[in-house]
Length: 334
Image (cartoon, rainbow, N blue to C red; front, top):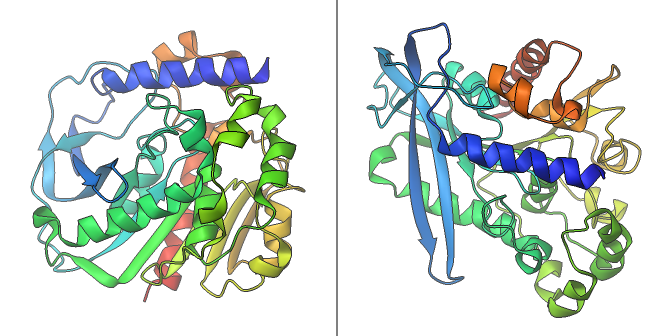
């Protein structure tokens, strides 16, 4: 039943993404956005990136319609601000069955702090492209991030505007596990670990495990260009303490003690024990796993399942996490 509501939620998220953006009180935008579509020919795999960036000036916008989620006021395909010659870059990875726009609230916080943000769709593990076999090939997510970074460093729109010494990563849920791989964690006893957790994911057939070659997963996918990583409510299915202890890049971690999807004691706590985050924020109040997604609009409050309607002020939580995240990267990306 829990998964039924989860995928109902994702259905609405996908439908909302196809609508125009929300009409918020502020009639102007200081955030630029554009969609970049790349193709990894070696893996025959699309890599779609949502890029948010600072603008030279606030631009007036027309009425942008309504969505089930609240997104920032964005100016699509506007010029990048020339206020700085080089900008730090934050790469972003969504959770299981999510999409590149799931945390546009966090992208907004980064852009307002003068970062460029590149959020990546992981083909086969988004709501629109969900494929059980590709989902099990979780190591492709880390490859997506490294391929996206290669592409962004050669992207004409960004040419000479990214500070290659200041590249960070943030991942939510399964995106957090992607971050551990990019930091150098190496998977172990993969099939046993996945078999143990697969009953929680009814969308993955039992026979799918036998159809996947897991041998590539034991490689080291560390990307040394990424200098700091922020993990938000991270999954941690396949990484043992011995490999976590070898991570030597700065790690920030945000976790909800009452996370109902990825229990804190099973996922975040082992990371806290064996990686020792540079910055740590454990939320002790009633914060759900899905509180780290965008806030629901008035339409969303009517259409989204009750478990996504929080009783606390989600926008306040987002500001708190946004401040924590921007401070972490400003302190670690020098």
